[in-house]
Length: 246
Image (cartoon, rainbow, N blue to C red; front, side, top):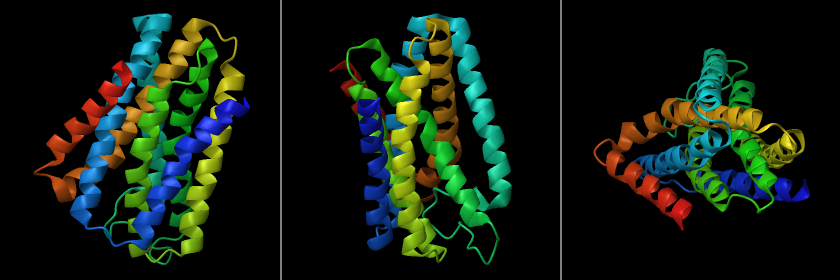
C-alpha cells in the first residue's frame, strides 16, 4: 500500500512541477498549447495500449466496453455539473477561467474538477501493483508526463484569473497528496477482486481519462497550436507507445 501511495504521489507531483513553471514563468501560450497536445497524445496511448488492453486481457470485451462507457458517462456528467459552477476552463492557460469575483464558488469548482481529473489515473497506478510484478512503469510515466502540461496550463490560467499563489500551489500540492492516497486506495480496494471486476474498473478509469483528454486538454492544445497540434499529439502518442513496448 505504501509503495502504491509513493508511485501515486510521484505521478501527482508533476502537477506541482508544471504549476510552478506555469505560475512563475510567462510561458508563451503557443508553447503551453503544444505541450498540452503532447500530453494528450501520451494519455491517449496509455489508455489504448495499457488500460483498455489490460482490461480486455483480464475480462474480455464485455466488461471492458461497459466499464469504459460508464467511465466516460460518469466523468462527463460530473464535468457538466462543475462547468456550470465555473470549472469549465480549469485547464486553459488564457483568460477563460473566471475569477472568484466573476463567478462565486468557481475556485471550489476548479479544485473539485482537478480532483475529478486526477483520481482515475492514480487508482490505476495503484491497481497496476496487484499482479505482483511491480508497478506499471508505462502508466506512471504517462501520467507524470501528461501532468506537467496540465499543471502548467491550468496554473497559467489561474494566474490570469487573479488567483493567489497560496490557492494555486495549495491546490496542486493537495491534489498530489490525494493522488498518492487514491493510488493506495486503488491497491487496497481492488486486491483480491475478481478479474472481471478488475477489468471493468480499469476500463472505467480509461474511459474517464479519455473523456477528460477530449473535453479539457485537446481544446487548449488546439486553440493556440492548431497548425501543429496534430504533430505534437502524435509525437506524445508515439513516445508513450514506445515506452509500453520497451
